[in-house]
Length: 122
Image 1 (cartoon, rainbow, N blue to C red):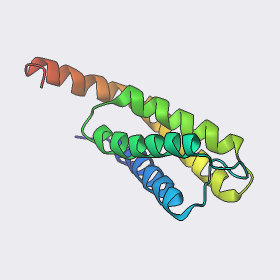
Image 2 (cartoon, rainbow, N blue to C red):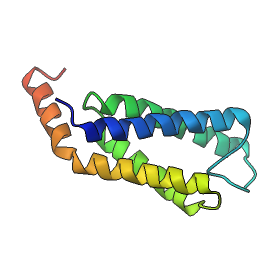
Image 3 (spheres, helix red, strand yellow):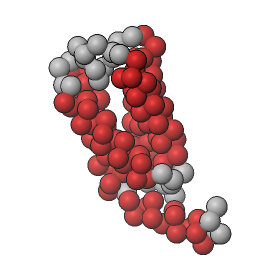
Image 4 (cartoon, rainbow, N blue to C red):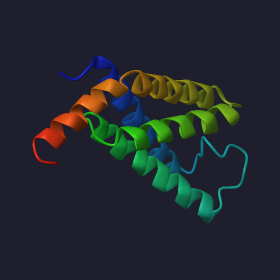
């Protein structure tokens, strides 16, 4: 049975990724703030937001724990460093919460990996 903390962390990652993608579509960039959003910055933001959404979905099934943990930590730092508007502060704290939840539930991910290994690596 999946711990509720995993669902919460996954929801934060998925919501954060989808929110970031909508920010890119609208042209209002939460992370870059007042920096001009040049093409490389937008490209990196697109990749990170898609990754956040994908890792949020895959953590629910017990996969890709370490990349999801690292991405949540990266987003927490980026949003908290750009903490001008309240939105950045809220997103930074949400990603920090996801980081903490993923870190706390690392044993569950280890159990899921051990179960996959016992079944033949699927």
